[in-house]
Structure formats: structure tokens, C-alpha cells
Image (cartoon, rainbow, N blue to C red; front, side):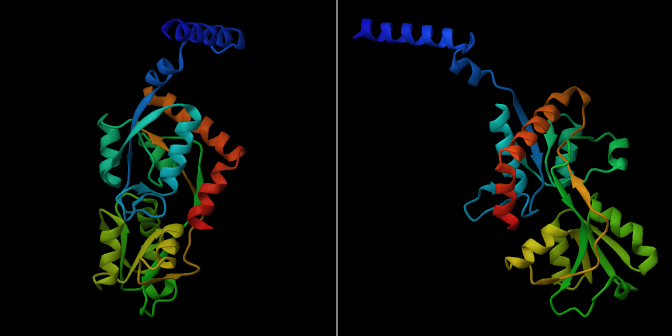
Length: 257
């Protein structure tokens, strides 16, 4: 039996050699795969959120998984929140982050290093379902919630003088939404697909206010250390491949139709 097994293994190695399989066995390739720590936001559905079974799912999570499989790397996920994800990357505790981060020149100048854009998004406004606010012009004297450090935060700050409202920052999207629902603030700004998705599935007893969007910006995967450029290169290569083979469109359709 042992002789037979040895013969089979020897024949398999010869076949692999002539087929150009390379010098390293599959086991060594798997064990030697690049491994990274990736940080992400919390409660930012449909891009990253925890499902009923406790799994971390969403558009970003599916894109990251598909790219990792395509490029042959592995990763551990840190589901820590927006500010904590940035801090983890800056402190070297995580290699990169995927968290619906808009690509902006300001962020690039402050040390963010982005991948190619993987999603185009706008920011817009939502209010409580019973609210009479129907446009940006109705915000005079009102309080508007945003999540700290986000593109929505920047958008609100850029128009607050024009429309006469006060900006109130919160550490997470759920905190911001609760402030609207609880009446502590009058409205909130967030990424348009996030607001519309959560309202559509009944997670938010709010209504989206059409016509409040800014110009679209792309989401990008980010690192904060130029020595980790390899991770961005892998992400870009994998993103191109999953767009070409249809996997990307399949992921988007799963969450946004």
C-alpha cells in the first residue's frame, strides 16, 4: 500500500513538473500567502454591518473577500468603527481600511493613500418620518447631525452658513440616527445609498429628502503607510478582475438591486 501511494505521489509530481505548476507545493503556497489586518466601520449598512447571526457582511465585506480570493491573500478583520479604524491604521495596528471612505484631496494631503475608486456615492439628507423639512432651505435655525470625520461632515460644514443650520457630530451612524429619531436634532447627512437602503428595509423610521445631494465622490480602500503599497496594488488588481468577470456587479446587485 505504501509503495503504491509513493508511486502515485511521484507520478503526480512529474505531471505537475511538466505542466509548469512551479516549484512550491500547494500547501506551501497557502501557508506563505500574504496576510493583512483590515479595519472597518461599524453600523454602515449596506457596506458593512452585523447580520442577525452576528456575521460582518455588506458590500465592502463582499468586495474585500472577492478581491482577497482573486489575489490569493488572507486577512483578519477589525470591526471597530470609523475613528478607531483610522487610528488603528495610523498606529500600525492595522494594514488598511475599507469603510466607505470617500477619496478626497484633503485626505490625500493628510496622509491617506487610496486605491482606485470602487463605488461612486453622494451625500444627502434624511429627517424623521413625520418631519415637515422638505429641502435644504428648511434648515434655517435647525440642528443637523453628521458622523465625525466623514465626507458628510465636510459637506454639511460647507453649506451650513448658506442654509443657517448648526452641525452636531456623532462618533457612529447609529448614534446619529438615534439623535434624529429622538428629536435631539432635526436632520442628518449621510451617504445617500446608506440612507436609502436603511429606510427601504425598514431599519430607519425616516424619510430621505430628494434634491439634497452633493457632487458624487468615489469610495476607496485606504492605507496610511507608503510601505504597505503592496496591499493597495493587490486591491486594485483584484478590483479590476472582479469587475471584468462580473463578480462586482453581482455584489452590488445583492444589496442595491
